[in-house]
Length: 534
Ligand code: C2O
Image (cartoon, rainbow, N blue to C red; front, top):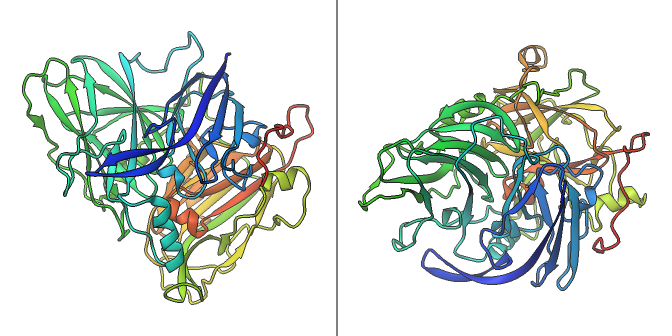
């Protein structure tokens, strides 16, 4: 294993998209940001230097950070932010992980433009469990606002209402022609005919799940969230913010140009950027300028398309990569996920939208939770996060009258190596919406999923305890539930939240505190000396 060094200068940079120019926060002046390459078991040191006026922190999304929670990145959870003019070296080892992950700012809404790919290749000489691709290509899907994204969210917080939706989606930073700006070019994916490519697709959008398609071509899905899957064929990828999907693409069609498209999937949500981002797949040697278009894109409420995609995901569960789903459960948790409305005297309407888990809307602390935990600083958090909601609701029936949320910085405590099952139930209190729930510090197994109320007698009988997909971000369906399991084998404080950034902002987040084990390699390491101060 090697040690790899990277330098991330966080700098402002003017960017022109949708026929207008604005300054954006970037890493090294790039949008999307630079790709980090490493191999399984390598150690990566990334020096992040903050040259902008905002506080910054960077999260390495999906990296397990075994015993190195100090390098995880979410501001006020595992570190104080890096202040303007300051620097911090993120130092971590990619133990037993290989595949596509990504990195992004984890403070305010800076991740809109501060994000990039993290590609972990298998150990030297170790092949993929699928045919070796001719070439690899990172595809980052994103969202673009014409106005400043920090202004968008600050405005929404002041008014108590939902923020403006984005003005376009992007594929590797470009939207392709959109209404009002037909000159906007799209990304070109150059390929040789008759070859197989590995596409490493990342959804870095702030607030929208996406469909991804290429005209005339099929994909073979081989990995999600840096865990190999049983290969399956599909012509549409469904991908939620936070998720990554690796697919094989074979250029087996007639030499030509083919449209690549990313369009929103938001089920019942009302506030959606409806634009389709386009790019093109160019076979080398194409003479004609005609682009083969898509016959159909799924509409934004194409739930069956999304469901059939997620239902096809299975872990490889091979001899080399056996499924390690916990069969016995120490902590059985039931988490309701809701959007609600709370009084807000200072807001324009006197109320504001809030989001919660088990009626607790999470309040960010003033110093990092990991520091409070490690140094035993009292008064920062409590460890009484409720294991179930205060009222037993019938989520598909009439709305209960009492769904007021409470505020708190409440964590749930886990003993080292204990096993956890969480049933995540969407309540659809305001409007049913899918929630991509992301857990830091672990991969989890998705053992079940359904629509309507979770039935604790019936549903567990059908759980997949053989080859459930293993990942770090999973969609909880609108008006339905998802059950996940994981082993708490990583001491520290680990954030769990909706990866729709607006829901995180509204409070749809909580954290687990995992105590040290007794063994020699079962404790959180001490913080690095350059850990930022609040
Ligand atoms: Cu990709 Cu806590 O985030």
